[in-house]
Length: 397
Ligand SMILES: *Cc1c(COP(=O)(O)O)cnc(C)c1O
Image (cartoon, rainbow, N blue to C red; front, side, top):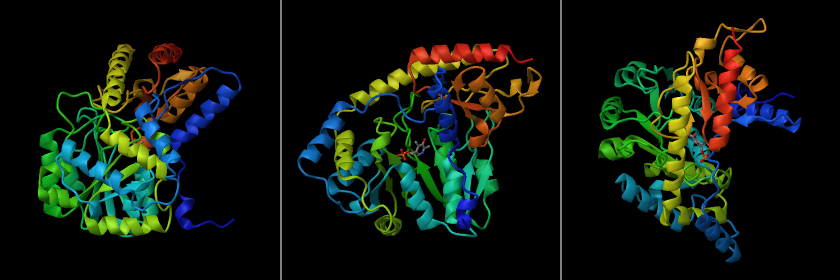
């Protein structure tokens, strides 16, 4: 069948692929420890579920306004004011079917052929594909572990051409967990303003942060940078609500209106009762969020320490999110029963077959020396999984 050109180069999510392979092995009765998960392993807090159930009982089961119900927009506006010191009105916020959908709408509304969008590597797997689907060209910058896996102001400025339209920032980062401090954000904002470049700021891991400083939204640094920032956030990670599909955007009214038009001709509104649950997530008690963060912090401390104790391994201490991004390249070039392990894909397959652990190869995030391990799984699984990795590595020669 002849398909559109735009899908001929589209890659399916590598994370989902490795999960499918691990799932097939599990179905055969092989016990696999999964470090692949891109979602919290906790249940959605009870009060949020109850709000959605109440909405169902009240009959809120019909279409809503395309860009979201006013109570949810108001909860988002209040959250942005309270936590990020940002002022928006209802025409400057919009609810989508997850942050990923919000990013898709942004790309469709802002980008086209001939434009460039800067994506700092290591990057979240969907950014390049979302940009390619819009017709624009992703331009990658690299960052070393020594740079904290973060974009530097110099590298940002060097990547800018006359075609550059936007920069995608994601902090705390998936896959590295790295986050920006105030100085770097100010430097990036200054360059963006000087060159009139938009910043898409994906802050979905904002609440899973272990530093002693708070998350700083780049939009809050000045009115000028607020005008250039399109802030993306959602409920999936903070409230363990990945299946609910509620994400949101805040930005200039013109852009929100364009995105509203796109959404009105594609998905229409996000699910009605999920939106009511979302109101309670943002307005209700945040106790569960803090509990989840503290549990993640314990796991992070353990997993980083264990990985750093393994021979030839180094593991960056992430400031946030629930991933570690250890460097495995010490083992590239080594042999298992005569077969070389050349890169992160080989290592991932080796660890799955010989170690019975599922991880995600770094190449999918633009950094082949590394693997991504999610610690959104129980401490017991983490301990056992790390034992297996350690043992599998000793078999390489
Ligand atoms: C999970 C994730 C998203 C998407 O979240 P949804 O709201 O579930 O669509 C966006 N950006 C990053 C970096 C993520 O890790």
